Image (cartoon, rainbow, N blue to C red; front, side, top):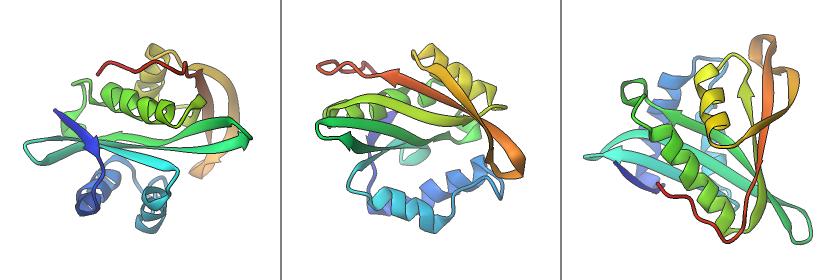
Length: 158
């Protein structure tokens, strides 16, 4: 599996995965995804094999106060036919490395409280559940908020 940063030519395949992974009203719109990707404070990682996109992940960061950056995982998505091969975990490590590269000290995310495979992935990678937010997702679904401190000077092994 090849892991690389996003290129403009990737958008159609990336959005096809979004449409496969999430039904309306849970999926991002094409316009919103384009906005996320264009953010200069974001990194988008692609997983592909033989030119076929298997998944992608988006992380963005902000400076909460001078000298303190926090990263937020927007999404990690793996096409159903590619699941169970460690791709989600590898994408997670790549976006953590991108957050470390900009010296983010923490990384966090929202995850659907009913998405047990994603919850297992985050917990296996050292994320802890810090709170629950009711009615975060459409149709009144709750989100769990997970976070992890990032240790500067380290790099994840993929």
